[in-house]
Length: 328
Image (cartoon, rainbow, N blue to C red; front, side, top):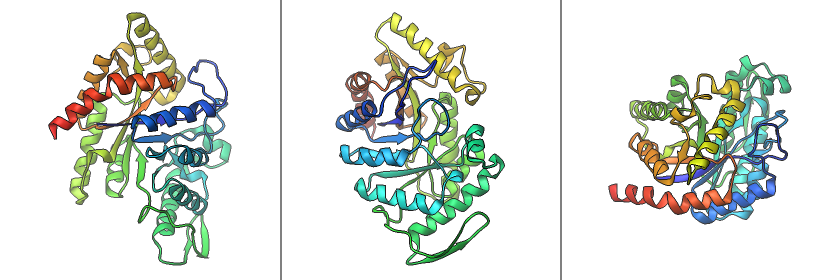
């Protein structure tokens, strides 16, 4: 198995959320992950929340590119309907150059009504705006010379997008997806797959199987690292810590609110999504995920704690990585 991080910094505390970090603390957290051999960090992007969440993910990732050596730097995700696609193509290619080819371009069409309202963009237009933006970005990175585009939303005449990304033909594309249609689309259109932190273990296994099946149907070679699964991490070493972890889990799922839909906000003991428990319990949960094809795990730490990260690297990673190596 390989491991990464999923999340982002916060600039201020908010009621009911105790994972608030300043940028400096979050940068130290990612730098420690880099030293410990974590594979990815995927940075969220949100707007108008009042919680101080990251709104300029590629700016923060560009800074992290200078402070890290090997960890890959991803967006999770850039919501394309809100952005000028040519400017995004330029910024992403610049980040790929600055990072030495360590950039992963995660994109999505958005799901928060308040963000669409804030940008005065109808949410009903999300899919068509996403599709046109991706057409332009792919063209910007693969055209040999200048190109023009005249679509429904965007018009460009005889433009040359610079710089070119270091990774050719472009950085890996990742799509956040959960529905059957979106998962099949990711497989058909050459995206890697980002799976969310709320989905239960059986849902994750089903979604990976669907993605793999669609890859086979369209003749696309499949590797398990083409799928990344976000999982909340809450290591405990005593029953008191377990009770506290359950309470934290309730608050987190409750805060996510409508996004959780029918998830287990009140029955967290039955929630199979988080890596919550002792090191041995977390190892067992990871082996279940690995058996179902989830070998690329992105940790979501409610506290973004360097101490927790070190404990995971010391008490969990060697066990699951040695098992994976032995099975090869």
